[in-house]
Image (cartoon, rainbow, N blue to C red; front, side):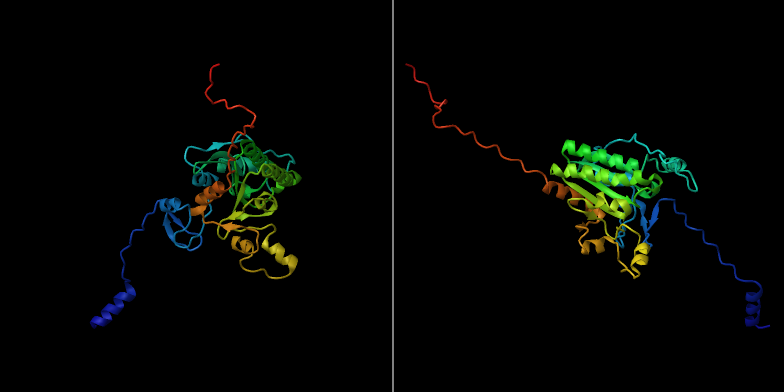
Length: 310
């Protein structure tokens, strides 16, 4: 048997065993994979970059505690109306009782409902901030969301400070029926009273902002800001296509599409958002009026003149 035949038979009967390489262990949460480009980023660096991918500029979804940390100066946040919690006024039941879903979501997110509101300072400037949280039943707007945002706006009006609302919602909460839709008018009315005092309101449209939120307070800002590539609209894409019986553009209902058509004023990267908001607030600060000089009529004697004795 030749050496070649021996080697061929050995390969056929006894496959060569390759040494097993130990798998690299990566701690949970140490790395984050970008949803858009798939690049792994060190989570600490990604968070320092406001959860914006350094490779493709994709804005990863962030939730209300992180938003507050990004926008409000350290140790200046004062939450409002945390004690308000939702109920089940309609006794809504689908596959699961609404009350059970609320309780489970509260335990999972540690939030009372889909919005956090409070007062704080942004680059040293006093603001009233509301931040919607998509984790809580898709950020849907129910009675508690409407009540907390209305109270926030009324507090801002009384304190004469600007209002900022970070929008992230699937729309009105269907489990509360008409009570949910009423919040659109209630919040809009509070914003009108705020506007009548010549105070600033800035909504920030993030991914996604849809339904009744878009149809009300999200589009009532003095300036409407949006994050890049955020989904913004009222009805869903498929509903519109089936109604119009035509194919919509690929970028339909994106922030860029809405800016091109005049529904959004400016698109701001999250890394520049705090600085941009501070600039806008400073530009819209009321100008103090100088005190006019005291007008003294001619017939009034000069009281500062030295009195001559008789």
